[in-house]
Length: 267
Image (cartoon, rainbow, N blue to C red; front, side):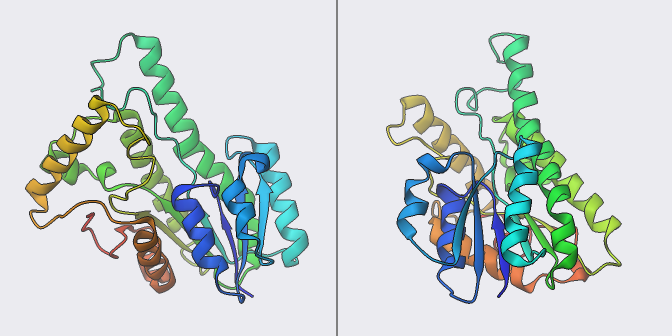
């Protein structure tokens, strides 16, 4: 049975990863969440091949305990790690880097974003590497974003969400470092963008006028580069596409930063 660990699995893209992977009885899926008690949608899946494991990716000790729990069930191995958990700063993402109310607030957003989106993913990868070495697939897919791509950022004129974009760009570099280290060991490391997906991470359930304006401006910039863009895709479509890219990835493409389409077309 192929085994998967999905971080940030309680909602959004992480939940959809678990739903699609868990739909095959041949897979065993470990859904990592910060708090089991609030993982209502995961619990509602009620699938025997889906195991809910509590671990915040910024808590190294919790990650080590999670790896031990996975190891007990799989016999000490893991096939695929999907680093989905991320922080999208909710309060200041409509600001440019020079528009923050004060330096401390800017620093906090930068540190928090880097802590989760880069350091947390690195810790998670390191802690699960021994299990991945023992697995037969040896794949690590880390979710990034097209707005961490330098050329796309310039072309679209998207200057907002600096801490998020900066931290994801750092993640992309980390993925390339792992790929270089393990290129002769059969590992595949990927950074992958899900596309622009209609989830609550993009806009809240009851968006403010500022949030609506931000999304409209972002889409207007994207259409400069992608004139045929018609709007966000669903989580179901995004995950289905990303799983196909992950399945088809080979050692030769290890270290790549790809879209859900398997290329550099981010939307």
